[in-house]
Length: 211
Image (cartoon, rainbow, N blue to C red):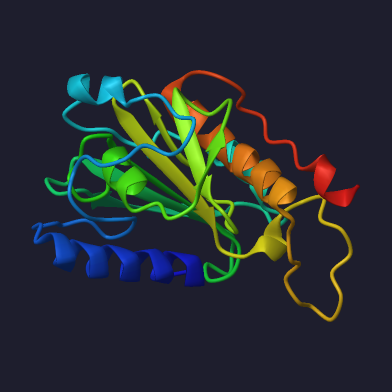
């Protein structure tokens, strides 16, 4: 389990307790359904027609390989959401504790980890264009939260060092990204969500990180 996954677990447990929800979810943001949308984003009208369940296990390894320098060797799938109506899929390398791509997909209206919940608990959202119907990331972070057709998707990675096309890293430390670079990475991660949504760009491009 990656550090980022552990952090998302902590957020879910903390906010879920505050919301008083009964959730079988294992990761992601939590709280009450509804709430404010990020600045510049349309209302999540597709949530009303949310599917009963959604999956990410159909994704092939090459859907995430462009986000890892090591070869993808496997994935772990587990249920997520109040009624186990979604899935968490963690693609990893042979080490299974270093490089990873962590995907959570649920109906957008899920009261524990849905898009409404994510927008409600966003503290400083930055709108993203080109991922689903609407999407955002948090200032200072590059994990996208996206909604399309009543489905919510969010993607994170195990370590920023795993990203291809990074500038030189000194002494093995993770780089500090600018806000423009965070947006570039968020859009690259969002291509995985677009694969699930069946729309938009599905090819990550991180070449701008090295410029």
